[in-house]
Image (cartoon, rainbow, N blue to C red; front, side, top):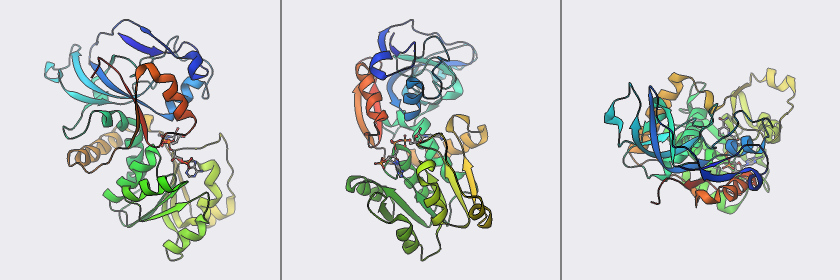
Length: 331
Ligand SMILES: NC(=O)c1ccc[n+]([C@@H]2O[C@H](COP(=O)([O-])OP(=O)(O)OC[C@H]3O[C@@H](n4cnc5c(N)ncnc54)[C@H](OP(=O)(O)O)[C@@H]3O)[C@@H](O)[C@H]2O)c1
């Protein structure tokens, strides 16, 4: 099969290669997915760049955890009824050498989930990381029903879904920060009632005004290192800050305001969702997908041959939404 892979970490254009590799065969409990789309996430880019560890976890890595395709073969113990099923896949490249930047991927059957008919193929490659991360930020720690929620970076791949899930799960108010007029429009269309340009406006003053001085109940944070102090100043006493990203490896927070205000800080990585959280999130996600209630923001569709350009775009933070690669046979 045709695949993109790397055998050492480093810059995209230097380490990503395209070549024919053996087509995998599903083992017991596994399915093989003939892929159509492969999603590129910041996490895939950081792993390839060697930002987590310069050492290779496996001698050869086919990148990308997210993808969409059709099951074309099953291993022992998996019903043949699954052959022909349109699926989205999760964690394909997490702790495994073979991700979705290829014609085929073999996975435990639980990691290939039936895609609702109403959902476009490309969107299936945006669910495993962006949509499920966004949904978990809203479900965890008691949910958001009746709450005032601030989504930092509301036009990001995760942020855009986060605004939509906040609305779907009953948040009373959704405020988003963005950095441009184009991104403000995207956040507003996703359902944010208040949108603040964090580069040009006084975010704390705008949040205070929008919440009649109360502050928000929950912050969903894309960059805790940049925004930790701001977050403390706009969170109501007893509120929670749910952190899913950071622009720097370390950050500091003052102890006394945290304790005096009963602030809760939560961190999570979507790769390690507990099984019950994953199943509950999938049920909500699928209901929203089947009802056509989610808008997917695909920034760019590129052929697999342009994987290095796709990585570079995500790396530079220039994608406004998801970048997906066309894989498998021409379609
Ligand atoms: N914990 C997890 O499981 C998990 C899952 C998915 C992603 N992540 C991490 O979360 C981050 C975002 O992922 P993504 O796929 O959504 O990336 P993305 O599509 O590039 O979105 C990031 C968004 O955040 C905005 N932003 C950047 N710095 C900001 C700041 N200081 N304040 C407010 N907004 C800011 C960006 O726009 P501007 O630069 O124009 O402001 C952009 O809209 C990455 O670091 C990724 O690794 C973690």
